[in-house]
Image (cartoon, rainbow, N blue to C red; front, side, top):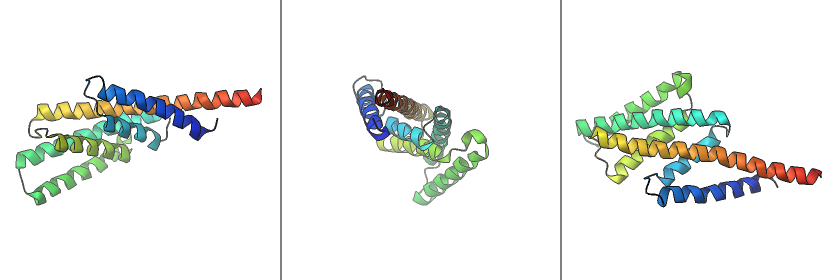
Length: 170
């Protein structure tokens, strides 16, 4: 079986499992954040090393977004002030890449965007650090589980292609 077909099967089966995990269990996991984490796994190379790169950088982005939202809520400024706060927080986000562990900027941006989007669209009280932290953790856990689903889907596809190669060789 070629790799694309193997990935289609592996990812399709696991997408069903992921969706059920998010929508059918009451755990509060966010299916869209899980899929972002899953995509980030492949975006960062699709290797075992991608798991830690994604987790660390998603967390960095989520923390920076949560801090920015808290500052926005505390200042209560205009759109111009909010825009400046967001801009400065993104500067901090990217400057983190000076540290090798935070050098996977796209994964950090995914963490930032997913956290900010969830907080703003779900009505989380961004000035309440406990509520914000709970939302941040839920998004981050969903993203990290998605990254793990990426790893499993890649391994599953590898098994499907290996079985096909073995059958052809026989």
